[in-house]
Image (cartoon, rainbow, N blue to C red):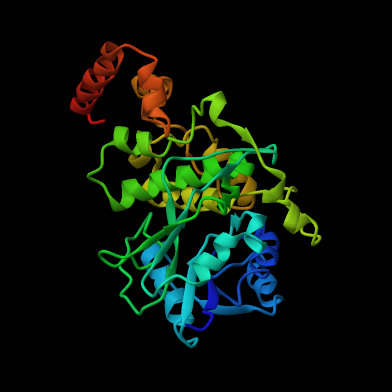
Length: 348
């Protein structure tokens, strides 16, 4: 079998904060990079077009849809001749630099048609020196055999995963997720996710939404580990900056949440944990010449107490819930479940 064409597929919307780093790293291992851009207005399009391996395709949708943005990139990738290795990454994800010399990469290149490639996803922390790893492996690669891609609107599978597909799990090469280097950005994104759930999945309970989007907290100290030198060295030796953090003045996720609040009113979102930000002040900051709007926190005192209780008990629902549950008597977990059932009777 001839060597496959390695195609990196990446949906993008306003990723100026990290796009240079991503494209420099991906250019070292990808033959072609498909950027599916969703109307970026921060310079991301111009950055993408400055890299010779990039093919830029437009995602004209005005709304977020995981399945559609991956499908657009996939259609562009399948215009390249076979065999094809499809690798779907976010702009804030970089392989560990040992991809450049690890024997595992040769194993990936020799995978049979229809094989799914997966690895762990270390979360890089704000100090840029440490990380933690959520449980399980994430499928990001597919040796293309033409299988149909079936996804979801949000939190979709990245690649086609045919029934009974062979899977190759990498242990040496990992996929570093830089989402954790800027906690403000990550919190902003999770506020947006919660609002999306309220608007698109109105039947979901507020408690369930909270539990899902706060699993990243309460990381046990023993799970936080120093980043091995070989994860970054190959990039840094090639002059790629892997440690600086670009912080935007106003995050695009916060702008979109602001639009939700103006359109639907704060009361619709009062049971969501998004009120750590002063939305009225943010509106005045962005639209200083516009008439003021009242976007004050609509929560009652009871709602605020519920959010405090959810935060206090979130460790039992974190990525490391089994660790925390082992440290507490079973009666504590039972009590939490009883309180949650009672809260649901009050609309939570």
